[in-house]
Length: 273
Length: 274
Image (cartoon, rainbow over all chains, first blue to last red; front, side, top):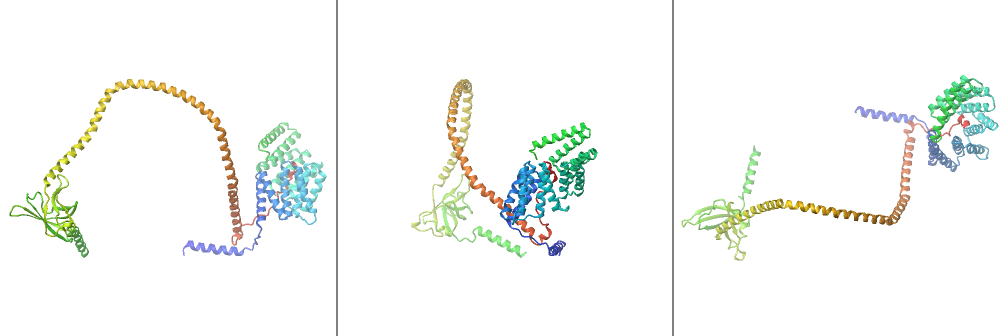
């Protein structure tokens, strides 16, 4: 027996042994469901690449499939994704309508949505209310989301950053800074970290802590540049311009404002992506 | 050694067979009263241009006649009539002489073995005629080759003489042609104008034809392309399904990580900033 044959035999035996050792249960899914899940995954990837149009198309098809299969929770989850795209494209009212639709499902008899979906729906609703400066509704939704999360969910950092935003909207700069610091501590993704740093900088600005605010904003800017998030970069540059203006550095403020304007112009030419 | 001997014997046998040693033959005779005339042992005997035998003996008789013995293949002898004759012949004026059989007529019976065959007279005259004929043919051929050369020479000298006149004539013709050309150009201009008006008239017809073609193309695309695209999509889906099935098949399923759970777009605090 040659060395090659021996190797082949050993490999076969090893494959069989490893295969037998696995106890993983393979879940069989229907073709329709598999297709819907594949569409949802593809939509998420398209969104991450900035292809919102493609993402919307796939999300909508996936939602229709889930609805045809009476899979309420999956359909609701897709609706929340579509709500985020609506919000990104400036259609806050449509986004809120979708989110409220999902929240309404939880109150309907005979339908149920999972805790994760309810948490996401409340968190997204809070963000949308904050965008519309409805602090009362935002507080209500945010409180519901925080209760569901119990500080252990994936969205914990995002909820804390939203709480910091809410505190700032209500004039509680110190509370905002504390929430933002917690958000930074609990951040798991770079996106959450940048959001927390931005919130810290905003609360620092409100508290006239220019130096730390500028440092936090600079950090957020670097992360957002690396992540390729143009909208966030513009927000960071505007924040830095405000910080330096209030700190009495008009030249630096003007420089950041000019950079921010140039970034906005470029973004407009790219089609707002 | 034995093999070499066998081969040698075989080759000898083959050679003998080729030489006609095993072919049955009969003798027939002819008497030449004007000397041997070039006939000798080995002279070929032919019938209609094919060798049917050869002279195997030439003897001078006491009366000064020459008796020629010919060995002829028995089967070929049967083709000759009883009144067959022979004549002395040659293919070319300088070719070797041979004895040519003139078959005679069958109703009088076939030529018998050991028969004496009459000599056809006039062979010398024919030889002379053949030589003359050949000479005339060669002369004709040579004249045929010279004639074009003479013609060419004549033409060249004639052309050289005519050239001066031709040049004058050519210039005149050229000037005339130029005049005709300018007239033709004028005519072409008029024709082009006419064509332009025709194109205008034909445009409507062409547009109608294009419309028909587009319509046909549209129908084709509508009927043919969607099924093709559908087939491609189905094939792609099949591949995805097969891959998915393979991933779930033991023992591959043990090695491949299962798909991550589908999650909606995550909550992002920046959503509040728009």
